[in-house]
Amino acid sequence: MIRYFTAGESHGPALSAIVEGLPAGLDIAPEDINDELARRQQGYGRGGRMKIETDRAEVLSGIRFGKTIGSPVTLQIENRDWKNWTVKMARFGNPAEDVAAITVPRPGHADLSGMIKYGFGDIRPVIERASARETAARVAACSLAKAFLRSAGIEIGSYVSAIGPAGENAPSPRLAGLLDTGAAALSRAADESCVRMLEKDDETAAVAAIDKAKEEGDTLGGIIEIFITGVPMGLGSYVQHDRRLDAELAAALVSIQAVKGVEIGPAFENARKPGSQVHDELFPGEGGAPVRRTNRSGGLEGSMSNGQTIHLRAAMKPIATLMTPLHSFDMTSMDAHLSHIERSDTCAVPACSVIAEAVVAPVIANALLRKTGGDHMREILERLETYRQETAERFRG
Image (tube, rainbow, N blue to C red; front, side):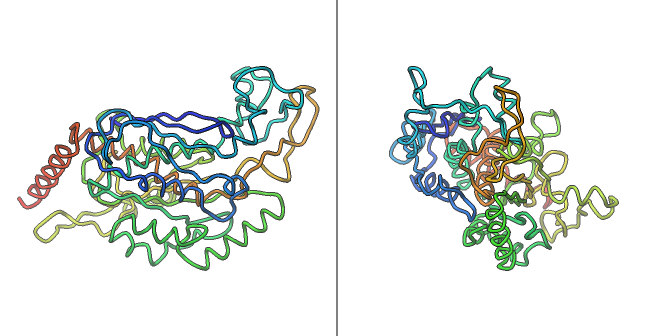
């Protein structure tokens, strides 16, 4: 099974990741990783940090001559901003006299709970690790799982359906056609927009909303749509809670900083309808698998993939650092105080959509590996093809 760990602080020397469990023989090129990192850095409403960083991953282990070798892959991403933080983030010695402790927590951030949990007298260590800067390492790590899935004919794509008050209308008329050619086509189309929206009117409204929020010292969240195409029927399991594919996918998405809600398909809309308007009816296909005329279940039934496109929705709250700070208090004096201001974005929803694509990749990859087994790509792909053929034969009678 594929698992990964990340390490590093937002303003430390580097971020790193170790990815274990990748099968041997998977083709990996530098652009498979670095193109995903570049996508994460884009989006209207980003702050000054993204003008400093040019994220690229250095591969330190696990790949030889462009192929995985079955051992852990180690990745490292340099923080170019580290040179401005060598005093505040010194690894050893005592703090310099001009390094003041941060003692005023930001509402909505990890500051207060983290400070109490780990016994800090300064919020800075919490800020450094809780920061969404950590997701650069996750995107790099998960890009390897995305490459694995592509080799198996499975693609992951996303777009932004709402930013603040903008968007979240009827699905774009472009969506179905893009998904017909695979979810990667959807992402390519979304990447053409500075806010990763498919409709120009929505993009214009979102840019205006971001500009207004920035002017007011405020922040905006939004809604992200994730689609996974090419997933065979029967990945996941209803047998145990920790093998339920919908639960694993939801957990992966909620693990992203500022994501507070997940839907599988239009789940909350479905909850207000009768079952006759929610479940996807089955109809006999012509000489093959049954067909469904709707996909209101989001491609998952009984915690397993049902052969349709998997559709997930994630809600990202507005970023907790506001340039017009909210009310808080000083942990040292316990006096009322406006919250701490840390350099931040006005809106990071477009970046979050790229991160969402990344974090669901190992979940689907592991569900596939549980089905096929195998230590190298040749045997995995052979077993997957056999499974696909056997499934097709079942429906031909």
